[in-house]
Length: 374
Image (cartoon, rainbow, N blue to C red):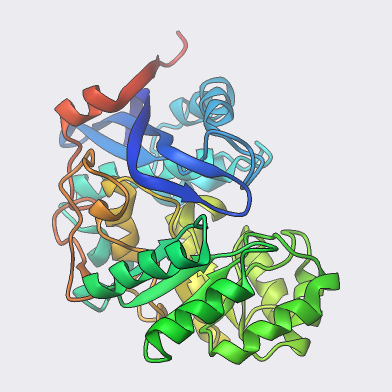
């Protein structure tokens, strides 16, 4: 395939309710989509990708404007120069540009979808997925009060979600977890996510979470603190899960060898793409480490791709693959529906969903067309 043009569509989609983590509060989903056109033996084919960068550099060094800029200045010109571009070679071609995994992932995703369309293949088939549905967990942001936390989680349990993940931070942790367990008991999967809000000094406080039978505690310490996570893991009974620390298969290997991760949250955008995410899945499976699929408040495009990735056999814990209605009144693709605690794995060619031009126009705030330099 030969890359012919790129259009980056910046969108802002209102959320059903604000989503608060330890580092920011979101009321809209701000991201950009990649529309890539290719010349192929079968004629022109369009592939779509989605960047999971946030509007501000608070979860990672990347943010929406930086992703657009590095794509325009550096990444796109490299890919335009490749005569036979494949999804499997995107990361190799972009290897000399340091960092920017989310921007690279969005481009790889667009190349991958076009390649799947060229071969008439679904993403699940390409990956080797083994199930038709995946359990659907939901991520609950930090609420204003303990009472509101219990009310919100009760609503999601009533909807049938297979697992609840609660965001926590200092001052919004033990009381909330205890209240949820008192209200709903121990017969549902419950985990917490700190988004690097604590330090090893807080270990005695964090050990209090061991009383509540949590599936795991996700990324309590800083991104660079793999060794300190291994120390904290020795002090806690709750299984240690890493998110922000796992930026590549190499980082996953280090975390596993140091005993820092009994569980890994795999997010393709964070690690540079779905193909790198597959490597982490395979590595973890070989070492007996559980993995689950994280979420970044994706639109239906990446949410559908995530469901296909989560159909691989190593994903033994419910992921953050909720229905579209969890976050959006309107999505930019067909709605991803949660039913009976699961989400169906798409079976159509490509990622199995399509961009709705009307919805894209409604939520688009800017666009940038990038063409090869003559």
